[in-house]
Length: 427
RNA sequence: GGAGAGGUGGCCGAGUGGUCGAAGGCAGCUGCCUGCUAAGCAGUUGUAGGGGUGACUCUACCGGGGGUUCGAAUCCCCCCCUCUCCGCCA
Image (tube, rainbow, N blue to C red):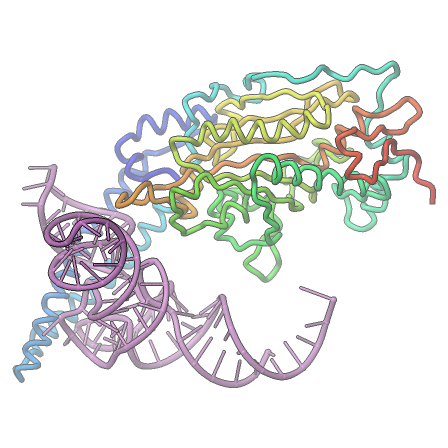
């Protein structure tokens, strides 16, 4: 959520910045609504002041045994007036709040301007696309042939966009989770969190998934709970409605969770394989930082995510998302894209964002700058470190051998009981 | 699921229809005092939103939402959460 005072004073600037995102943002209704609110507020507050004063007077009169029925009758009217004005004000504030909650964050000045992903800028590349002496196959084909991935079974159980891993496939997924968490906790200084996988709507409102993107969330029927679309939601909201002490910042959390997404509107996209599923695993990195440090922390978070790919020796590149491509809540986002040889392309495997105070304002996450200082909103950041399923895809494709087996990346072997090569699962 | 108890400021904890943003204590801050430490004395310390250039001022906030009343932390209704006991369960 944007700062209403800032919006009030910089309406044109805000409109211009929002429009670089590509949508058409109509802020004309805002000023009228805002003025109406302040007008109502002024009127109702002066009536309340009067009521408070007169009520005290009534108390005094009664104590002295005098008659107060005349002013009491008068106040009854004032009270009714307050009631109706209060109702009008509440309606106005709801409208204003809904409007503000529906506005996306302002892109940071460093974000490249552009409409589509074509306009994203490549920041750097690491490694070189894997070379093969044969034509590399696509991950579904390899893993299915090895018997470690069974889409038919998943479809039987749950339909399209679900997966089922078996044997070394399941072990590989589990090892990746463990590997990532271990590095982030022991080497990068993150505290591991294992949060609930279902959250209340307030949590989704806090991070920005609601109210606008409810159609992509799985809601529990008959209950005010949602399956989390990312660990960002529960982990960021850990500190909702809190005032953190400066000494604690930055706070760094990492969490493994499954993620559940309806993928509404992505029909026909990535229908095959493990790339786009209704349920996938992810290790997330979340930070709470001061406004002064948040962009340094973003670089650090990005490096922490990159480190996983370096250890796994998977080629990747970093992309600075343009204004038209960053998400609703983000002020700036870097994507990490891993090389997938079968498609001869880089595919997103992580998204690292600084949300500045956008989520903090919604969720009420503040910190006390110094002794005596007023609480300020923190900056929140998060990024995948990494999407586990897509990492598995990258390993299967980049480490495939001509005979259809998969070499296990060296860094991962300790997490897989020393296994060096995945061969056909016999059972 | 059944039965009880409770949710008050950073924390502990009083409170009752009216002068209660809320006693008292702790913690914090500021002075004073003491050779240091400790103690002592005095003052001060919440959040949000309006108005004003400003000193300042008003409104709201005692788990949340409704209601009664001239007036609600206090009375009534609904909901949420925590704790204890019973049942059930991984």
